[in-house]
Image (cartoon, rainbow, N blue to C red; front, side, top):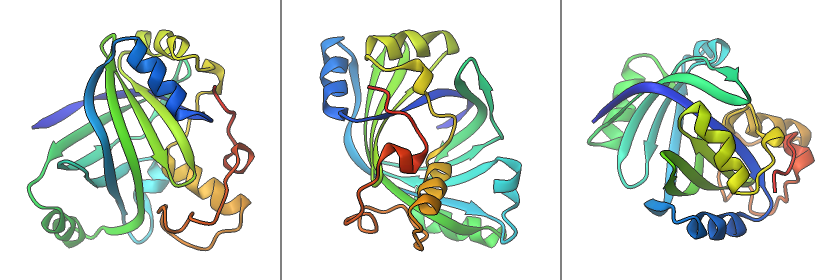
Length: 202
């Protein structure tokens, strides 16, 4: 399946992800996918041309394998808006070799546990990251703020950065020397909101 549309989302750093999930369930949200472990590889040229242009080339493995391209985004009414092309592939290793054959290399690996719900025509993603917990709301621009308010999230705390940029921020503030955003790397590191440069939304 190929998806070629605009990704419009708002991301929030939260203290209590379980409380958010309880509220999501109380609103009769539909479960799209139960808690799943994700491995993500982000690719770029040796000169980091994609990063400098604000574009993303990503290979993801969870309950399926997907290849994603994202154009540079813009902030629209507090939400992050950009074109996204995503499709399923059959084999993770073969897809990785294909991308590398085109001259790209994996510059960053990150993992997370994600649970996805649907509410009012939008998706709510509950993300457990190695450096903290986040809620992403993705859907039409008119849906995001009302849903955030239903979940008790402070809209003004929405984060205009992706997980890679947040990792670069915490790597700088905590003077970390590893490349990948893995649970193993952060096993003995306690990350605070100030390390990420974000505001707690709940």
